[in-house]
Image (tube, rainbow, N blue to C red; front, side, top):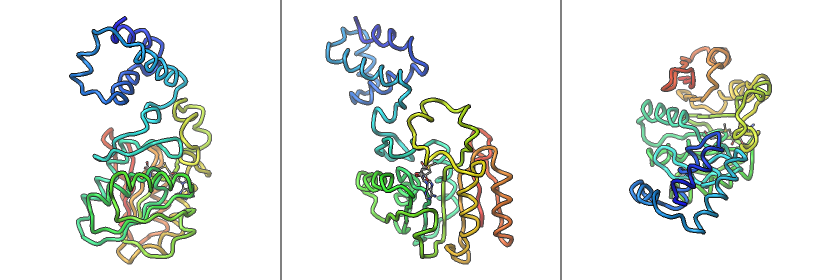
Length: 271
Ligand SMILES: C[S@@+](CC[C@H](N)C(=O)[O-])C[C@H]1O[C@@H](n2cnc3c(N)ncnc32)[C@H](O)[C@@H]1O
């Protein structure tokens, strides 16, 4: 059998067939050309076993990024595993927005619920004079974020284990967060690869998904400088509820609901 025939046999049985070639190519570190050249050659016994192993994991709905153990975010290659949410492309748009609106050097920035660390790491890379503090409620998630700081050689950040602001004492120019925002009742509609593999602590929040925004809105003023800003990722149906919540606690500030590239409400900026 050739590589192509073996791929086709397995792909017919997968819900997301494109992931098999992606994982195989990534794991074998093959350029696109090398991969195409391989397709019509006879598959080796070792690669046949390897492909079967990947197939079995994909068949059980394991996300491709967890199998590969790495993903790309804002030009950084970071380690991902079950300790943290797989970063989503929409979150790159939040990073873009913050960088576009804040060119000042030396800002102090707090990232709440850092997960793999991607928001803090991307900001730290593009603004090397900023001082980043990345927090998470989960110790094992923070370990992964620290590993990613080492891997990407980004050093202008510190880590604090904290339940929202519980262990925060300083004031920041920017507070950014992509918190868990899915309501429990949404579980029924969620894809298996998300629900069965990604940490529920990273996905779900009480009060219809609003609990962490509520904690932030009630307490953020103590941790912001006078001209401090907040940037939040939100669920696409939460634009109105989250913006009203923050406008109530920050009557003097401007609250904007911003859309992602697919036109859905995805970010809130408060300044
Ligand atoms: C949606 S994930 C976002 C991860 C990362 N910032 C990203 O954008 O890919 C939310 C993160 O918030 C953390 N988290 C959940 N509840 C928290 C809380 N009360 N305080 C701080 N972090 C929390 C989770 O452990 C998880 O890492």
